[in-house]
Length: 434
Image (cartoon, rainbow, N blue to C red):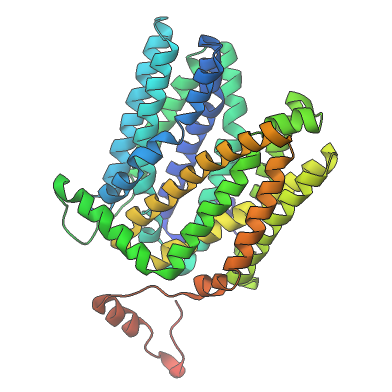
């Protein structure tokens, strides 16, 4: 019977993957603590809705400003070292905040500046970190590897971190950030244990070539139809998803009459569904094709928007949100896995960063649209927009999904020779297993 460790991180994925997973889970715990503590801190320093909203904006603004640059940097330098340096800088920034809190010198403007600096370092850490998994595991194991990384995000960032951060904040405003700094430092230590250092195959580029590197990545994306379509799907579905999510707290408390506690439980329901999804992904991957799973997930997204637009029952809302967690994290795992399998190793950072810029750009656009619609036509209007927009998008890309799921990576001559050697018939004339 396999041990708990083997169930969480299968032995075939290797020791290096386990160090990467442990580092990711630890870092996610620190981020989850700040997810609750940072808004509480800002709210304790100001009553201005604009400044409170600015704190939330610091989560995506660095991606929009530096995302493409971070991807180019990740593709031209030692990626593990970049993660360590960026996380180290995050730890320094948080410790500086702790000093200001302990001495009573913290202001809301200082906290916003810290949030921006922390978010900027996180962009570089995540851009480089997203390239490590495909360098450490076989393509066939990317699905289960991504599922385990998603599990860490759900358990540490969404479930364990926020209540812990709120509890520590009640003890003292600086305590959650002390623990966050410890988590970041431990994440650096864990990732340093990776035995082999993944380094891009081409030499480091000078700063003056970063613009050229970004253009090279965008040009590759423009000419690769499967990945390009996947990025567009993610962008559009994030716009439609963010429109109602931006006013979800008002929808839950006013339209459904759930109150603050009910709203918190509603968001927790999606995380619980996600945990079941990511730990069931191995079975799904073996029994259902990626194309089918992608179509099912996107179809359920359309139906979820329609269901939320129609319901007035909190119980039904809980069921819908639990189902959302189930399919959303299956989709997230599949889309990441497909992209990582199709993108050449030397472009992983740039294409991942384009994807993330699209994600956060979609959130900004969607939240703006949702706010306008809710103000003009009521709290269900964003759900109707999301239903119509996602349904039309799904109809347009329905046939393309098969091509995305079945696409093969474009290999250069050296890689093609290596793959051909690995696929030479073994004993009995049968192809060797992957």
